[in-house]
Length: 292
Image: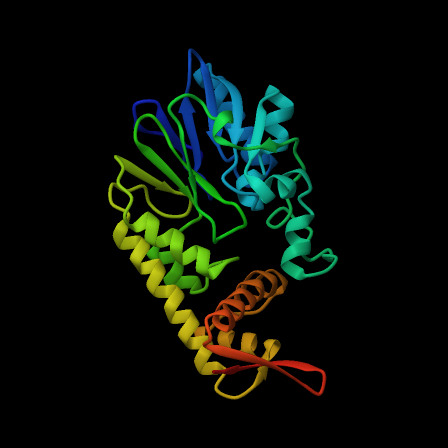
């Protein structure tokens, strides 16, 4: 773990729970694409940089999930590097309590205020193409989270963040986190047709071909949507829908799964309603969902 692997030219990644991109710039300067899941990840990355004689000039966050920004604060404190994050995700990076609060829909209790859902705050600036090193391309990848982005380096290596999951992960956990289902499907269709020398998803194997995996993720989205529709054959409140979906996939509920999968299911219900596939009604002060 935390092994430095060269992909092509000056483009590398650090093997970790969420892959960290590393690109060499001028001289001994390097930048990171994300920073790992916590302070310990930051320490390991700093140790690696010191061993290589490299200086960290900037961290480019793809989005603000805690496993991608967890090393920010430590690395910024140790190196003085700049940190950039896109759109709304910049606010979440500066104020990480927003993530568990958003997922829960209220003030998050102790069960949700931990490093897996809430990183340490870091001094991030808004990311745009003007902030990028020469030759970098910014690739919008919305859907998984608010304003998530990927990057193409001058070596034609594309870092894809969390826009898709490995087949093994989907087969095991079934439901990956999605904020905006319509945007997520659009992103997957775009990624399916991308060409590059190499693709680096954060939670799947590095590969020269990404279309097959993108299609597997697309198929899983439609499978989940159809399963939710089936559950809603009779009007049901959200909690019952979530319970039955967990049961149908053999999942086990805890606080973390409740907010991650629960938020995702709410997003599916929104998308299904907006596309005319389910209806919502209020009955005896209960919000119920039923198949259209």
